[in-house]
Image (tube, rainbow, N blue to C red; front, side, top):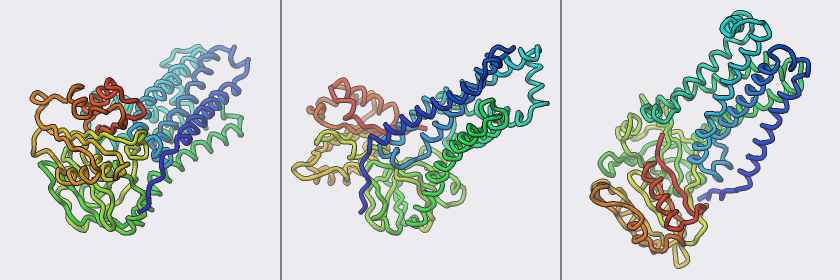
Length: 445
């Protein structure tokens, strides 16, 4: 079996440096495009600031796209969950800067024409080429930005959220056309225009290569199809797939893939599900909890259904381990990633001797009990099942210290619902676990 390459921190450091240089160059383009006479003219300062915010905002929007373009070396070193968090934290800046561009540019041209802002907006729409495309692009960005507010996002089904997000690519394409046609940094500056085109084409190339091309190639190579659908617990189903050359699929325990099942009604959706066991050629298994339309439909799949995949993704693996010993904590369907990770940890006298803790509300919700028990015994570890409601059985600082007395000397892996993960990570840090030894993956939209 091909093993996955370990994370390379220098890849992330290099990417950050390149992104910083790119932002500096983008701001530089806006600065050199202005002349002193343009700045001192009526509305000149506002127009200049409008151009500056447009350049910075669209560049940061490109960075957001790159963060989720699934570049393998970056994924291995950072993990998709962290990349998505960075994507979310960065997201207010492009929208705010582009919004500032709209306001500042309108004010600047209104001052230059000695007219009102609303009149100037009408003039833009009726007299300036490519302005309608810019308005549409900005409108799409505003809608996506509003729906990204956590309270609203939580109310959306993942399928709806994914579809809405696809419109961002159209918004960026329209913004690019508008910027190239009217941007002061590019009108009369052919070299700057050529560089900007290359940057945008390179970003589009990354998306097409890693989010379209590589998944198609990988799906063709492995030719996956469903061979068994098995109920593991109430609302929890395992799907076993068979395929070709699965020993060439470089997957580590704890990772997930994006699965697209070519069945009626769900063929157009790709959802992230953890691999619940290391591939054993010709089989690979994923396990899902029925929490939505897509996951519910998987329980009704028929053997023979073709499958397309992206990945594997995620840095929730043994490759990020700092200490020899490990503790693994999971709640709910988080046990799927934990089970595969446990299988992948080193065994024997010098192994990880894992302490495995599984949290469930009811005995019926415990998944993979026998598999976990067998693996824990083989890895010379301990298995603890904490069962009961939150009111009946608390999982607090005292409980974790009791179950793992030497937790400060171990790497801690936590997987489960977002609130559970945040709670356990906070407890672990209070118990002295070093930040670099805490690895977590939360299931959320």
